[in-house]
Image 1: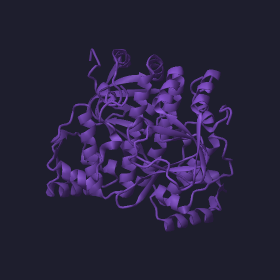
Image 2: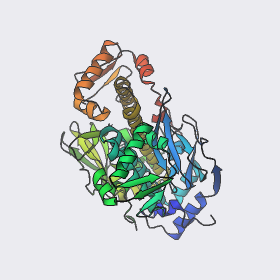
Image 3: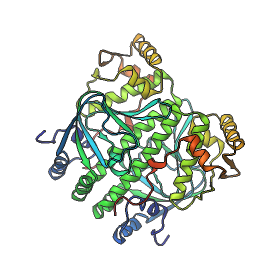
Image 4: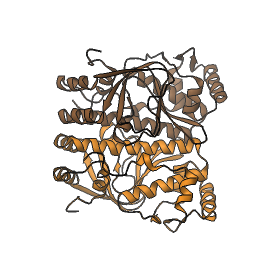
Length: 244
Length: 244
């Protein structure tokens, strides 16, 4: 990681803004504090006063909220290039917990780092606000999914979204992607039971649409899945730089 | 509106950052294009390529998504000081529709206005990122509510959240607030039927907790409602400026 020119965050922000050399250098300086976190050990606890965010460099994380009754709602999963707890650096307490799904590498970012970077290049502030807006658009899709979509549509939509997000940072291919999520993660994300997740995945496989097995998602009929999910990737806004 | 020193947005951002005279002046310049929108007429349609956001100055708005089957999920309601479609100014298409619930006054903001403001004062960029983060935290609460909370808890949580948001911009009192939402708005927000909303409100009233009638929410037992909802306002992060 001597240069971040091709870091996942850089790839992602490049979908919004054509980054100049100076802006790449500012992004580079944001990447100075690398840290490793182990799978299954929370990075940030709900209610913790953190003032620190992370940029995920390698691996997968899920962000979740625990209810007082012990049930867990996964709010989103994060893949390389995503911020973890951008809110925790600005809000006084974290409203989430973050759990690495596999061993991960992440870069620590403090509020002062962000202020300094924004002072140097206001376009970077806009790009990070773009990324935060896109994160919110995904949470909105999950809200609509849980509120209004059937289990098979919800699952199809989520897998297609993951595929598109990974493709943006160079980790997905048209035919599928590697995915360390378990059926328990899928259940807590989609508001289903693990048994229901299992049945839903079997149905999607038997209909020849998609297989999720042994840590790999394989699209057999991508267009069929898009049709089922009524998946319109416009909310991911990743069709090329808007600011040049 | 000759000065925005006490505009709802200024009041709101002041909970995060102690604004200097120069920053107030930049906020002032953001407020130059005032517009009136009539109740019931959408301001921005889902899928519209807008590149324009609004700052709500007076009145209430709801943001929603229509599903292909015609059902509507209200993602959030906006009150004075809130951005409408901050995402639309950065993402290429709007992933929401916005409907004024009453006649409203809003200020138009373009991407170029934001870039100019951020260049003049990077602290303002951080403050607006804070506001966007807070908006996302609210959507997360609604997601958890729909995914994991019973109808009475969901309703109690939403009414307490509204009360706290309005108090921040000087529009709520400890004993309650004026609220133009109908039972249909509440139903589409909370993922309930209108009949279920009606029954839930009656139960909360009969338990002596809260009354919502004739456009007014009255808290009879605020602490009792907080206990029922397990409402912790930390995610609204409005306890005083963090950046001084």
